Length: 243
Image (cartoon, rainbow, N blue to C red; front, side):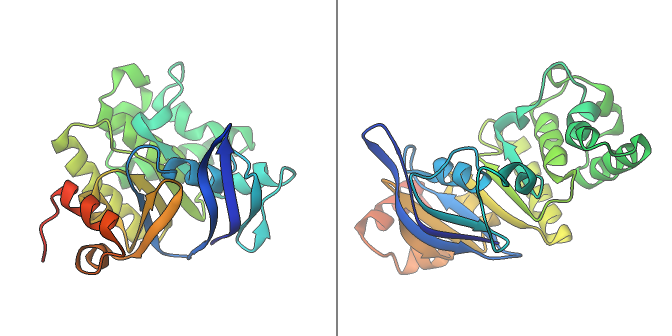
């Protein structure tokens, strides 16, 4: 799905992502985890083309991402951020259908797709006519997920999508989101700082530190076979019980 070759990114004198070569595979759920400032969100933004790498290349579906094709390629990617990232002056229905309207989809087709996604994400249909400030945090996040899925993208990228939610709301949405991805068989790449969430979602977990991938594997690999002392310290700090 994605292939990175020697990709790096700096902001001023700080190298946030050190030269990285890695592939993300179709149908796989990958979680990027690590402390604040480790480069996980920057790596996600490089994948979706919101920022440009200083060096290296990124391929999506076998095609190199460039300034000339990134807008069309981004239509094949869904993107979810914390609290939904909704436009406050648009209703839920309008937020979800915004890009489809821009692409001149028929109104009937848009309405049908929005209703399908409301069912899929368990958003009450009465909420579709509400503005973001009239919805709960969980509802806003469900609308953000609907918007990301509107064009039936090949991959969904999620940047700490549940970081601002209360624990019970977060628990329900985690369950629903995992079921959605499994039902749709979507490739997903998620950023989180929570190891429990990483284990819940990730077929594959990438632990980052200071711009580098420290370990790549399943959560149990990180627990049972840590690559170094940093991995052990990170696991212990998360208080993940050993199997």
